[in-house]
Image: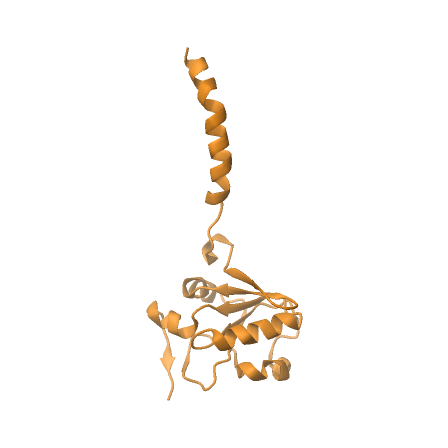
Length: 149
């Protein structure tokens, strides 16, 4: 009797589990190994990351961090270079020479860093990240930020 009951529910339950498992399979945060939302450009792609994901990345920094905001308004932690967003392609010598090196671009709102990220992706850089919402979103989370005059 129990076996008959189990057979009756096994197939529908199995189908439900098969359909639900992919939805449970992963999150979109840096702690799960999956980081950010991929943005496709004309010739490449880059990844938008949240302030929380960026904070996790900073804890074991293995990337080159570029502030591209014009004019300088403040400083996020661990900046490696400052290159104006509209001059990123003229200053490639300031970036890692390996186009597969991990590079994170930041600015105030993410408009400038988004443009610079797209430009690098279109030039063949394959590991580019953009701080979604910029340092405004970073500050809204209460993370450290040093204002500059």
